[in-house]
Image 1: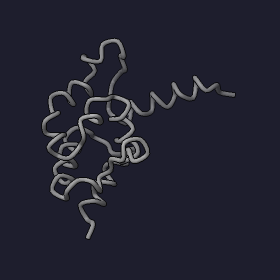
Image 2: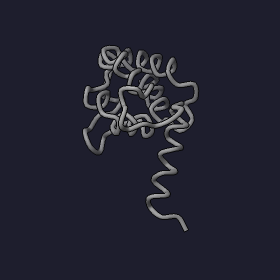
Image 3: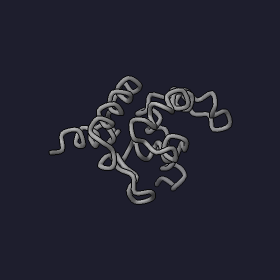
Image 4: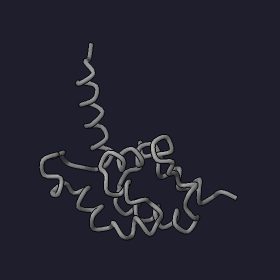
Length: 116
């Protein structure tokens, strides 16, 4: 039987594999390629409709990528951005992530783009 810590650890590994990260290093987050990429692209991500509290927070960023929104905590979802912003955000994410498997934000953005 797996403990909660084992399950959480396994989930963290799966998330990082899905995000294309080669390894996780909490103590040196400024060296984490994911964090560095977000800092570099911060202005573009903000212009594409992501709020700063998502872009700047590792936990929220991961949650939004995995679930497609953060409606329960902050109320943010792709429905709150324009279709143009959704198109731009999707383009930015497609350049960064080789695989979209397990990343519901891709589908949520496509849904927003195709809304009537």
